[in-house]
Amino acid sequence: MINRPLIVILAPAAQAEALMTDKLEDEFNLLNAENLDELQRLAADRKRIEMLVVYTDTLAEDCAQLRAMDALRELPILAVGRYGSEQMQDQSIAAGAIDYIDLGHATATVFEARVHSLYALKARTDQLTEIARLDALTAVPNRYYFEEAIDIEWRRCCREFNALALIMIDVDAFTAFNHHYGAGVGDNCLKRIAKVIENNCLRAADVVARFDSDEFVVLLPGTEFENALRVAENICKAVAALDLIHEYSDCSDIVTVSVGVASIDPTQDQDYKLLVTEVEEVLHRAQQQGGNQAQGVAL
Image (cartoon, rainbow, N blue to C red):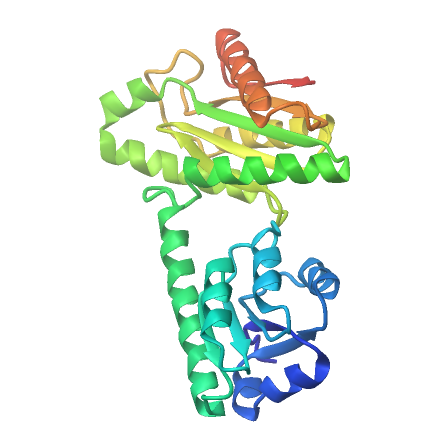
């Protein structure tokens, strides 16, 4: 089955049906939500909505409310009117719609073209955003992406009363490794370590990112301390199992990592930076105690 891009039409059923042309239904998965509550339920059940079409009597108000919803605010909105009102067009755009089309003056072909144009723009924007969020060397997400992710997951865990765990990984004596073996060998080492970390974090919700030059982080939503510590210990063992020679390390004769783990039950009166600060301190303790080990704290 072809996985077609999902577009949700916010409109009464009869109006939504008028927009679901055969051509669009061949290329997109078109779903109708008759009100904002139904649209939110669809957004919660579906993994990815690509675009919204709004065809209601309260067009500007609905566009503004969609822009205020966390799960939907980044989606492009095509506002659809049928009254020939320039004021409605101005109000819809001001409220957050990307484009406006008046069905009183447009054919089905023009409407289809607008939908295709907005979807193509979003697809291109998504591609560029994804590239900007990846670390060029290791191909894992970068620090910018991580900071977005931890902010989102902190707020989500607050709402759902879930634990949030963070792992921070630092390559032991990497400066010496880079100096003696060369930057090219050092880059290859970081690539292999990034892959090892990814291979030990397989849930869809897990986020692996490069935090600094030789530091990586793993964000584990909904993970209790004991399970997070187990992941950290597995990463330590897996990096050592690469058996990469490191004659200039104080920890071992192969490349190893020090790992800090911290977990917390987030609350609204705290900030995710508390978790980052704690995990940095635990990582430092692991390094001070000889490296090549995982240390942790449950907050």
